[in-house]
Picture 1: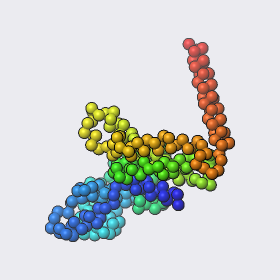
Picture 2: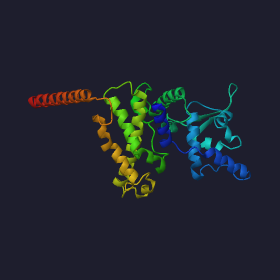
Picture 3: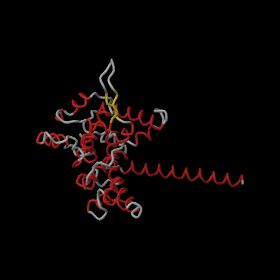
Picture 4: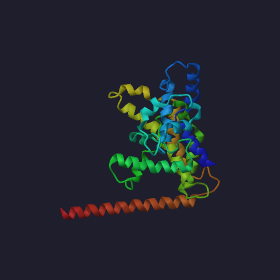
Amino acid sequence: MVEELLMRLIQLVSEPKYRFCCISYMKNKANPNQHQDNTDKDGEGVCMDYVFMHWLALGPLSYNEVYQKVPDLAEFDLKPMLQRIARYESPNQNQFGKYYLKREHFVRINPYFYKYTAEQRKKVLEIIQIQIAAAQGVDSDKKTEELFSVQWPSIEYSDSRRLELLGTSWMGILWTCILHHVFVNDTKRFTQHAFACCLRLIALAVEVVLYNSLIIDFYFVCLYTMSCAKIGQDTNTFDQLIKNLTTVFDFRLTNRFDYIPHKEAIQQREIQRLRQALKRLETESLTNTTEKSRQ
């Protein structure tokens, strides 16, 4: 249940509003003589591109198969949208004509797309790895972490209303509880998937902070981007995001919110970190001494 909640939160925050079907369909029903490529208005084009990119990422589709993914668009002309995001291969004796997602769009695929099943999520990650590796000219079995890091959800499609969720106090407590359970290795109350989802939500919050900071840092170079800020630095939401990422995380190293004491486990982790730091220091000192003696 916790994993499902975290998944829905990621989808709610990071995905564009799924509203184009009803709006576009009703517009065209009401105005049958109007040109049907109205999808760029009110963000509908972005939504359409986003949804169909994710279906095409799973594999090529014929024109009829594209329609089957969203039956409400039965009378809507999808060719302008498909020309933007896909390349078409003409039919031959063995199969119908197919649309293939353009390779440059694979880096924009979000594995947390709300229509994906767990099996489809796994499949699309494998396809993404192959496609991005091919685009970079590397073996798909190498640089796995670098390829997958591109697929973290981003705030590209987010608006300020949904990003406010990341600044709520309960969101900070949710992150803290999961991180605490991971820290003390309480496997009964956390899973690796819940931990990964938690990190992705935190990454979205960090992206908001960095996004604003980069805009300020390069203010004189790219003044026009100021209008693109998702959340202003002078807003209460931004302040709450900073609070969630700093003071709220203080609970992670304490027992204040948890009914099960973990003092001993925390102390052992602290001792382990100190030993590792001391070992690194000794190694660095030995290396420096060796280099000086050679000189």
